[in-house]
Image (cartoon, rainbow, N blue to C red; front, side, top):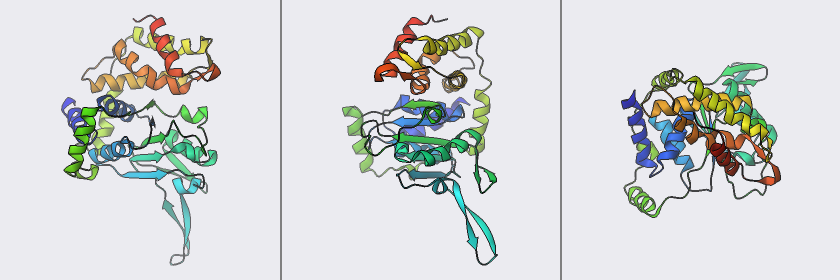
Length: 302
């Protein structure tokens, strides 16, 4: 299993230069069965990361560019009249993919955003009363620009809670940016990557992650952190029970990526800012990331 994970990590590192933590986090999202929200400025490699991942697992990649005039049927698909057969035929939307990139999700209207809720949680879409299951694995990477908010529709808490992890790629260092230019000169693109895992193997890895052991003290640590967000005076909306479940699954996936069959407190500490921060609302518009860091220092480590 470690060889398969290493092949996948090395493959992504060929196109995503110097972003080891981002690669780990996106793989944690995938292997834990969740979805990822990337909050970053344009041009740092979010689309490249999604395309490289889809290529590496030999999966189907689809991209949705969200705009205010995007309709729910543009995402889920619609029925069209077939004059030859004399009946309606279903035309699948872009959600019928293995890796779906939803670019600038906060530019879509709330009605269109809600069309993603069922498919992200239930792995199915319902069109004209008929439910259709999407392919497995199904992984959504949504992006939003944290700087430009004009003409956007902020994601409601219910939809933010659907994302397992939230993180950013950030700007590269000087050395990484130079390496990126040299690599770009050779013409290496995501389409040139060779698949190193099959979709069946990805499902197998997801199942293996659920078998990673958690000591009762680690589970109590997760519960203490989640409950601390509901009791803090600076937080108006604490983390839901779903957040605790997602954090546990994410720690199992991270431990598996690191080649262990057991979870450490350090796994929890590394993932807490990425799993809990976007599930909270702080009083006075404060940054939830800073509050999470304070809670990590105050909650005893097992």
